[in-house]
Image (tube, rainbow, N blue to C red):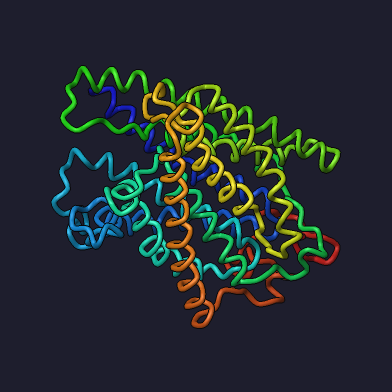
Length: 419
């Protein structure tokens, strides 16, 4: 299986690319010109902070054997990867990149208004109390896996629902940007966003296709057969779901607003990728297309709800990642099939309600867990060092200059400030 280890090294690099530079570009282009560097820096900081935390105690909390009631493992059992076999370092690195991008996704909900120092404090606290426990519960043999064995191939609950709930709570606690929604805060560079979306699509093959898990004790021949079959299915499912989501998003956008936009196409890419993530190995081609189409349409509709609800989710983390994650995770209960390499029969394939029940319970537990701990962390930061930059820095000086002493573009408006 030398080919497998070579592929996993490539897959790990591809998932890291999803954060830097892909997500940084995707989010950076969607912000205003005076905050693009800060937005990109939030992704780069997530890579640095979360990566180090993961190898110190994150792997131990997620996949250690000394479990605390099934909710998280002992952070000191494998602290600093002590006792981890050299050959397992590829697995550690792969899972590390998942933790990194999950934390980085949250930043899109709070763009344009947060102190960089507050973000740096938030990152290690959030992954410790929210991400690592949910990863342990779902993938590490913990509470959800034991009591409600939901299918989550590559992170519907662990990554997207987790990040979506956290982003929504932070946006609520931190508050709206000054002038929102009265002032239109349009993306300043859509080509950057479209380039970021394309790189996310590319990197997502590492995300989904790299998440294959072999049965314990499988022979080399059995592992090779599973690898060839499962990687092909997950690759194709990821592809067709994304294509369907793009078209569905553009259709809903056209019907609702009269235009099919480049931002809609880029957002449709992400919506489809998010939704197929938990289901990549559980559904057939028709199921993958259905999941992509439903997620693309629902996410396109959902992103507009923030204006009705007064939630300044700046870059639609809730509308895309929470909604897309919910769609993909719950539809497994209907569309999963035992003919897929990693699936069992769901409701529409004669499997009854068991799968749907387990998927629903996994969602409920993940939402409650991350909701509680994100709220506690967010409030603690708000009432100590504070989240918000000064009003003048947000409105006039620009967060790039106030937080980093830089500007992305050497272009001044008539007022002498970067727009």
